[in-house]
Length: 621
Image (cartoon, rainbow, N blue to C red; front, top):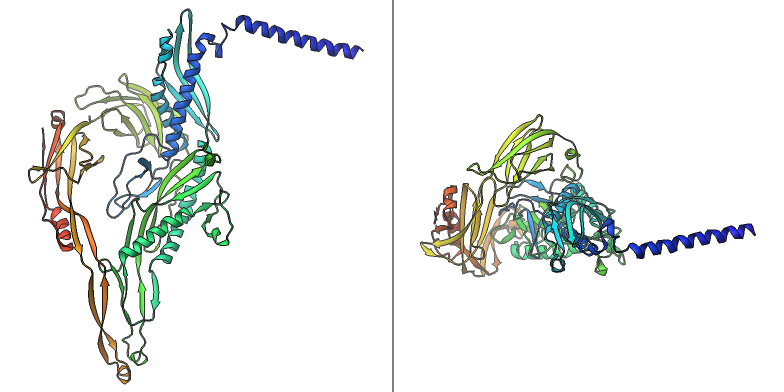
């Protein structure tokens, strides 16, 4: 009985505590709120947290869609030899390649580290969070003030932790509050998707599995090596070979899957397309015929691949025996976009992380594998050890103070230092030999200064102001409004204008190589033709035994072609642009010379030779 009384006593105490808690809540609920915020101010703060979460989700989406970047790396043009730029235009969205070959044939990587993604996401939130909309609250009499934000990000496997330090003042009537620290965890698979992307990228760099598939596709869909028993020459149309090869690459790339992902092995041959690399999430590979690519083959005669017969050795003619050996060497370059899907993507609630990379075959074989791991994947922790005081001043060319964001780059790691909002900036830097101080300011070209932080010191950085100018293109002194490409090439940056869709450019003082290529519609028709090729072959019968030969001729059919767009004007000019010209002008006028209208393939080739000798007339007004 005593045990039962004790149990009843416990239940009575619990009931009294619950009732007391309910009475306290209803008595003081008007003065209690979230994190000590008065209840009538809570809706404002709840709206702010919702806005902060929304900005974070937008930033995450940009990181995932742009290969881990919000602020894109500097754009680098490709060339005729290497068609890749440094970014892929995918559905109107620029995505930096994680691996590509530059226009001057240098292998380049631009893989962001997780630390760099956190930094960029933090900067994105800093720029966006002060634009949260509170109009409805202002109309209700709320006073809301947001001070300068500073956001720290921690990307984890299945969420992103946001730690925002910013004074947020909310006031209405007699109630007021100042919240200085705002923490939220946003559900996202960014971390695990990025790790899977790194696994795939490093597996490709170590094993070149995409290039191995490319070799198989090349040998299956294009003439590479072989021997045919025939006495007639064998010919292939280069355009047809490349078209079929490109279609095969597109289809076969789409068939690739990663082991453990969403694929089936209903047919044994499907195993060929399965890549054995353990990652979380499903993985897709995409190639498109519309993306930059390059296909080269040798030997060839214009657009024709031709192999001549062999059989004129003494004695073989008596047997009537001829054969055609062929060996063609290909250089193939194309792009693959890798997409990693979270498990909920097919239900419409998942995420996709994507990055492009170049696939390169040289001489029928894969390129050499890189002997380095993904750039920036393993952080050295350099930024955590800032212990060298450095003073940084930023000016324009007239020595006026320019507020700029300062970072320090060393060993592919970027450390955010601060801002020269009030000159000078005095902060501690990590120790590094021959690192680079980078200054970025709106309306100015980025400036870099090589500086070893082995001891304290001071640095003055001059930034060149950018001026936006309208472009007026003339041909032989008359206004030109049709297709042209205008390039402004300098040691620090290059800018390309596709005219007339784009008619303005931002320039700073400096030396530029200005190139203009004017294109006009053409209808150069290369008629189908049959070319006769003759060769000596062994005679049949007794004459062949004594090495006697006879001439035998073959017809080679060359298909018709039409060149619809031809170079018809332009030139090159080295020009030093002064800031006085930029500051006092709104228009850059470029006058180019016409080239002869090509009516044949030979004329078109001549135009390219003449183009190199033509200059330009450049003026500012």
